[in-house]
Length: 199
Ligand code: GAR
Image (cartoon, rainbow, N blue to C red; front, side, top):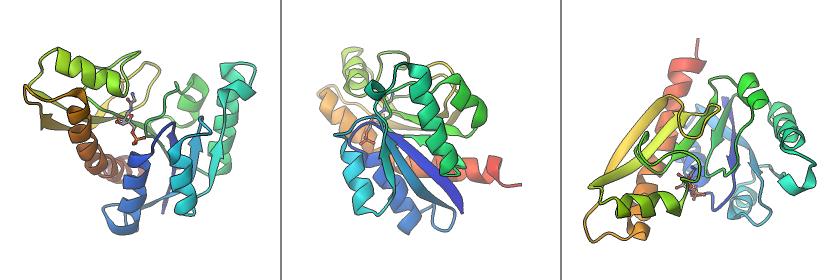
């Protein structure tokens, strides 16, 4: 069984989708979530982890003197959990070089747009959907990609479109996109395990 660690800062609906895929879906018998790490003490993802009996830790940036020591602690937790794959699921911090080196090709991120469009620094959460509506896009979607040293620019693993109609508000686009996120994240994890992690 592949050991997944999820890093999340917010609600954790993608974390829930991955946990559910292990219990009833495409990740059954293939991968399980062994740890949830959050940088936000108030994140609902921590409640979800508790309810699912999954170990969780909260590592707050403010408890560390700099980004480097904060990331060292994150890395220590990943290693203590014997993580095989790391899934960023609404994680609002940058992963540093050291973590990327140790987990080279084994860190995935989900982004709520059709990358390379609407990605990069400052493009996260509702900002993405607001920009999509403002630009008058006819479609948006979700992208699962490998994390690298730049925001939202690593190799794409899976992408799925949704239609955006003229009357859609950013909230409506967000709802449609989130629905496909929950489908493609577990599928992308399965793809990476089958193509990259199995000999
Ligand atoms: C998701 O829409 C995810 O794509 C986005 O945050 C949301 C987290 O929702 N991530 C980013 O914008 C990262 N650039 P969740 O906490 O319910 O899974």
